[in-house]
Length: 567
Image 1 (spheres, one colour):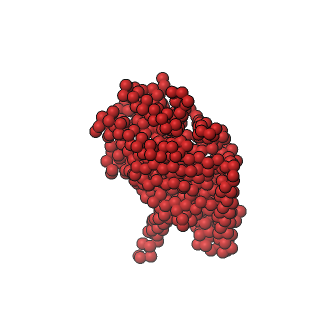
Image 2: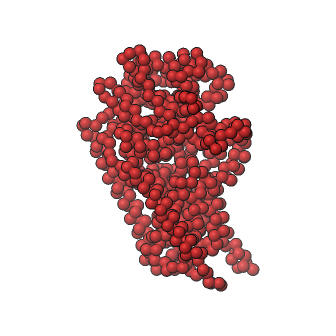
Image 3: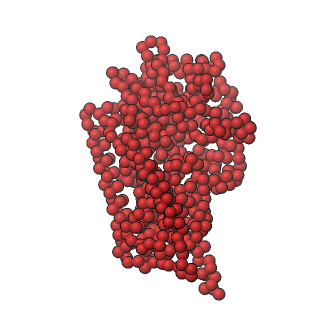
């Protein structure tokens, strides 16, 4: 009786153990720090092995959904808190919405489970070559799903966690951060096969060959990354390398809507500007130019809506002219179509007027900043009053910023969500940008986890393009990042502070990612996915022998979506 009970419930306990082990490994990996970064190479092994062990597609689908919910619950709880604060939902309701949305937010788990299950049902002899092919196919499908499914908008991917081991992260300059994800999923699937081969009593040299392949991949990426870091550092030390001093201001003022209700519009704007003037003024002449955060000026600039707005515009312009230092600040822009989240470059001129360059945010955050036209109706806005009203800009812009003494620097502004879209920074690098300037507003994240995820995703734009970066936010995390992804300045959150960073601008380097490697890699993954699907459809579902359960089904396997938070 006891043996029958054990046999009946063994799959449940094995599945639960695998799911919990995967959650524990991925949660530790999400710290994005050494030595936890090593766990990215094994974090998906328990789940992959479980999915390959299943005897039915229904079971594989069910466990993959549970894995997505468990992963989101363990690493994205901060998003439920932010959702509750922004929309007015209760904390419990926000978490229920988040958990129910997990399969949409992390669909790559379901895709990976499907592929691993299908591949393990093929009645072919298990060999080293076929196992490599299966791992490549699984990694391609996983990565293609991450890159193409529109519901995956939080910007997380497994490769982000390798920032905790900087040499491994450098391979992002070949095909973007999703190339790192591809390598990690490939390695995890191989290791899951190795575990399964031991369980199925395959020759130990088979498992050893798979382990050797993973170790070789890890070593090759480490060697490449170490060489790349030394190469860029060597260029930065050359005599003719340009140097720029950038002032960044973190005012630690947030929730402008609450300020407006408590103080009134005029007093709220007065408080904000006074804080930033006060933090900037003591060091203003020590920097070549200054940067204030996204929408720090919570109204239109240059196109005032009221006499008070015109007064504030003139005050900001006078500040720039008096101190003779360019200022980049976030504000609103508008035209006949609507309003835009924008970055304004205010450049002092010899005359009485400022020279102004404007960049409009290309990728407003979905729903909270911009609503697609197919859903933008009055009854929808009445039902969801928190929906955004901004319009998207059209393209990236590279601004030539004069610094005096006949010096000019080419700067590419990115506003918040823009920095999580690699195509923009890559286009800026191709257009000659020497410095990436990210203006963000992370104040709607109630904890550190969301702020850290946004910061880590931003760092990879510097690694991919070989360009240093300034990232400025109102409440943190403000950072100065060099061309290999190291933090030169890291301001603690929730503290008013101004700092001046001296940045070395190495000569622009060629990067495969910026020259199309990012897109070609996606095309390759999609092609592999479609060819695999076509092959599976032609061959049809595998035929099983009734009453038999081959050792082939018990063989092996290993996936998680990525670092969504830093702990």
